[in-house]
Amino acid sequence: MRLFLFVWLLILPLLSLNLYANELTDLLDGKTAETSVDTGKVIATGSSVQSDKEIRQRLQGIFAELDTLKAIDIRVNKGVVTLSGEVDSSVTATKALQFARQIEGVATVENNLIINRSLDKRLQNTWNKLLDMGQQVVAGLPLFFVALLVILLFWMLGGWVSRRQRLFLRISPNSFIANLLGQIAHLAFIMMGLILALTLLDATAFLGTILGAAGIVGLAVGFAVRDTVENYIASILLSVRNPFEVNDLIRIDNFEGNVASLNSRATVLISLDGNHIRIPNATVFKAIMINFTRNPERRFQFDVGVDTEQNLLTAQAVALQTLQTMPGVMATPQPLVLIEALGDSNVLLRVFAWVNQRNHNFGKVRSEAIRGVKEAFDQAGIVMPEPIYNLRINQSMETTPAVKPPVASVAERREVQDISPDYTIEDKVKREQSVSDSANLLTPDAPKE
Image (tube, rainbow, N blue to C red):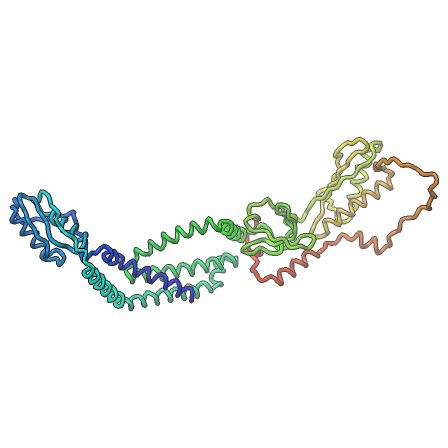
């Protein structure tokens, strides 16, 4: 309400200035209440041939009807009109010259008028004008209050309509779009009230001035807050068609994490390390995005090297058989073992396999696959290349007995080999949503890309 009163207090003087702009100009230039003459019309004297006497009588009749032109002396000789005397302003002198030139039969007009620069007369004229303007303002106060009441009523009605979120949610189930529609409706009601108020004040031309100024200001503000506007538009587009859902594991540029929320300003991720990542929506909209969760079937790969003396077909068959019998590895699509590269001291095999992420943990299945292939190679006698070191043996050093590596217990092996899904990050996302006070624009009903 304070903002509304402040805006009205700014508009009211501008309206008064617009309504009485001509009067203020008259005061500054010394004008009187008369308006300029339409020079497009020709004043006829009723005779086809005009004599000097008829021209003088016609001008005297016109000047006699205007208080500011009564004191002008008129002389006519062979169609040449000479105007002399004292006038109150240059505007009055110009008006008299225009009248004289419009008389049919006038050849030319000589201007011998003298402008009265008397301070007393100017002050008196100004005071009279101010009194007239004051009387007009007082007479127009009821109309101003009615216009103010119209704007207030439309402002309140627009606010009431904008709070009917159920109505806008029927149009768009997205809460962000529904709120935006409510704001647009509120603004539309305010504009209708303003137009009606200006119509009551007979100042509709002032509306064009306001819209023009608003357009210029809007253009300047748009350049100043270009990034903010771009971010807001990106939020609208992302909320209309959600490219991801809550808890989807995605990668945006170099940032990877589970989606926590999409609000009107940014997309919030929780990284695999548990950190919050806030990415502006404009960046999200333009970035190349990888969604690891949208397709539940995901392929992993790892490399394993074998000695160049080994039978490669046997090594591939052992690795493939191991993957086919491992829990968590999908039978379809089938695992794949390819020869990736031939090195100086080893042959690099690249292993591919698929995991259903909804049933098993992707990282754990990959880890178990690497461990299983390594153990299968050891049992099959497939030698993996070893690094070569140059050793210097000191004879004086005492030899120490070899220490047997510890053997994992059954419980430890069961814990390591557990490939069930890990919901640690998902639980963090749920906690983040419970404490967040901003509306999440990711809804199950929104269209998906």
